[in-house]
Length: 122
Image 1 (cartoon, rainbow, N blue to C red):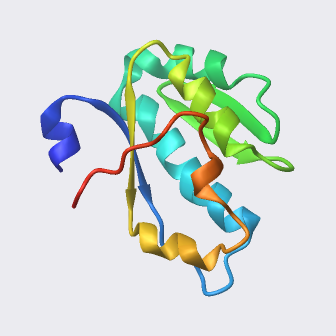
Image 2: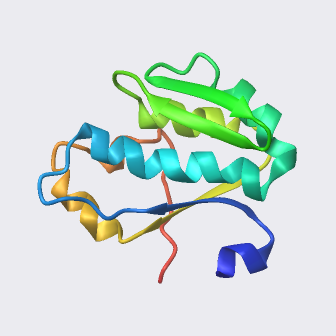
């Protein structure tokens, strides 16, 4: 994968949703890469747990070298991205099969950040 070869810290979000994607479906596609991050980047495990501690809608448990993410209630994706930004190093969020997000027509990704977001061409 190009992200691994580039030497950047990343979350690889594979979006493959059911026809009628609900909130839990969206939460799960973000849970998997959050759980994978400390396995690939063990030095981030403690900082990730601290950054995500107290984030509404999310429960994080750490068992070296893994993180278990459980969603409780409603998670704010902008808050999640802000907390990831607080880790102190850039994290690329790569979304594969992004066209699948159309199925969650109730979710507005254009409002995730107060600053403009740039898409990488594929």
